[in-house]
Amino acid sequence: AQKITQTQPGMFVQEKEAVTLDCTYDTSDPSYGLFWYKQPSSGEMIFLIYQGSYDQQNATEGRYSLNFQKARKSANLVISASQLGDSAMYFCAMREPSYSSASKIIFGSGTRLSIRP
Amino acid sequence: EPEVTQTPSHQVTQMGQEVILRCVPISNHLYFYWYRQILGQKVEFLVSFYNNEISEKSEIFDDQFSVERPDGSNFTLKIRSTKLEDSAMYFCASSEGGGPYEQYFGPGTRLTVT
Image 1: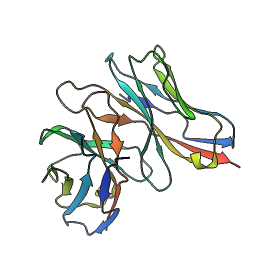
Image 2: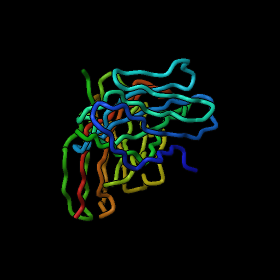
Image 3: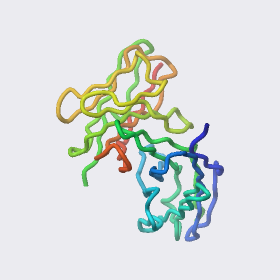
Image 4: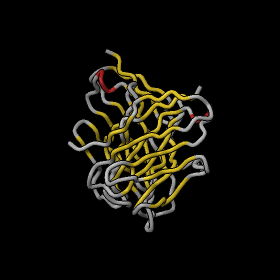
């Protein structure tokens, strides 16, 4: 069963506009973590933001915020005031706990964001 | 700011050859991971490592793959006999804990098997 779903393969946004990248997830465990990573054309994976399933408030990191709706199992990334440098692939990911070992991250298929000047 | 490093950045090898991909995790991290990303596809988990042993491995991580922490700083992925389909970006990651901690990724090694 697919655990992380990103339904937007590609998005175009005008510079300085806000953009929301969608992510839904599936898990039966009450304890989990949600992540967003950015992958520019150079290929590296850049950690952006993290939300724990028990966190009461939505995570924010600078221009990035995570719109966490637990009941809907969604974890959308919001980028405010987009910049040309935001053009990249964005991956939503989830980490389920593994109490006896190191738990892996499961990635979605990604959304390619392109910012228009 | 501490970061995960990987060498080489790009490796070209012939089918059937052995390759070793190297990673230096963040120094106070205890959990280590390898992921791979075939061009244009999603990132896939390969293996996790803790306390000098494999914690979990995916179905991709078959007998041709092995991992090792040969000293206190390096973490390596060995592919014994490379196949064309092993061509991918290989990412090393590390985290402070095994639970809901961020995993920090290295810049990746692009492996090309010809």
